[in-house]
Image (cartoon, rainbow, N blue to C red; front, side, top):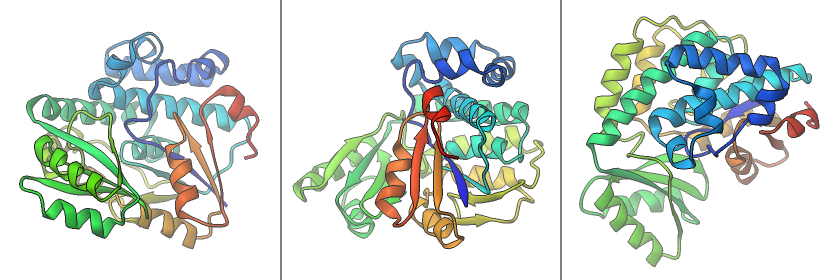
Length: 302
């Protein structure tokens, strides 16, 4: 069975999706819808702005979702069939649209509210994130607890990769300790400490803005970062998404649940190969590949 995956913030790159946009009218329609809802030229942000501008949270989140939905539309034209969806953090929002939980218009309304709330907190706080590789999650948690200041594990990405977030000084101190343990440390391209308590003001603002948005039940299985399992209760999605903003991404548990449910083909749609790599590092006896160009979509075995 097939599951489609959508990556989160940090996967963006300048010019992403331009060939898909130019070749597929359905992809161009995604950009048009996004620009109308967002109130600015999304095509320019994705294709013409510098990478620094594209990496700003307020632009990066809608741009990544648009790129993922362009890939999704092009993949459908090339025979994509799928039985489930999942996303990593921001990627869940593309999954909402792909699964029919949100219309494209409401998808962009929700991501606009999220990006603006995140951007305001990022501008007002001093936080950062870093990926820690080659250590267990338990060891990462132990080191974070030994550091003065606020720093916590927030993304459980694979058995050997955990992302931490918190106050910049505390993250730096933790990274020094990780380096002493011979772990590999990579500071992430985010503007604040996402999925930590530092984001609480963003969570509250976000909930207020989306509390009246209608979410439908998905047409396929939906696997959740917050639960690390299949989501089956869709009765109060605004509250769940607000909680997601300040809660860890349980991606390792989520992948285990997907595998247990019988999925053996993992198709990443959107910029980069981040989730494809995590799947390959976490699961055995599965197929995983990414599609982020017209050529890769057209050559894929869906």
